[in-house]
Image (cartoon, rainbow, N blue to C red; front, side):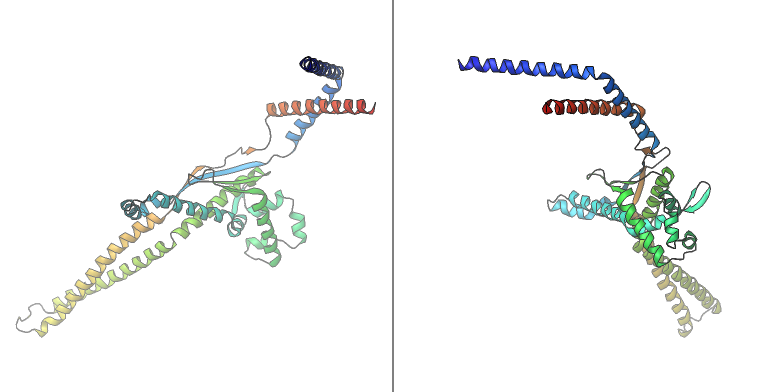
Length: 353
């Protein structure tokens, strides 16, 4: 008996649901003019909003960093393999540290400030990037009232007010516009991005930042080996001059005594001393040349390879939707909003009754 009652209740509930859905669809069909009007209006506003507002442009540069860590750790790998240790973990960790270092360089205040104060050719004029940035952010009048003058930056004149304003601009860039990302933990590929409504500014800032940071990183990585190379080169040049001089002294001494008396040992002393100087300077010079060549190899190995994979080019990708995507989103949002508002109104009226 209870089974029959449950079946009957389920049948009544299903019938009630189907009946309610039919009434709801009938109600929506009756309001089709309203739905079409609201959907069309929202579609119009969606298209207008998408194409009237300035989109955000995305400037992206990706590059791979290779500092030859595998060859520099070859001895460690050989020793570790003999001990039964996997040395690849050391090499991966070394590469990771290099990527972390250059990532922090891109986020540093000094590099961003240097980029802002760097020059670039925009609209056939050499201007500072900070000029374009201030103009794009509509800060010209405000900063001018605070005592900021771009001409002072061109002549390397700084003040407390200028430093303060530039520092605030650097914070804004790091928070709103700059992107420093490593797409995959397993690779040494780095992505640098700059997003802004000014397409020219986005591309120019991205390119200058990448150039400035990569040059600084390369210079820093080879600073010690470069200094050592200069010292060895200077020492070898100095010893070469001394060697040439000692050879000349030896020749003059030999020329002054054309037929020395073999029994007179004193007369041979100047020649022997000059010969010893030549031999000593020659040995020193040969050793310095060996060290110089080794220093050149070490210097080349320490130079990090930064190979650019992709760089920004016009037209930049932006946040503006394509026409087809805009139509689809506008229709879906407009239809959903109109149906939801009608359903809410119908529910409210039925509850009030």
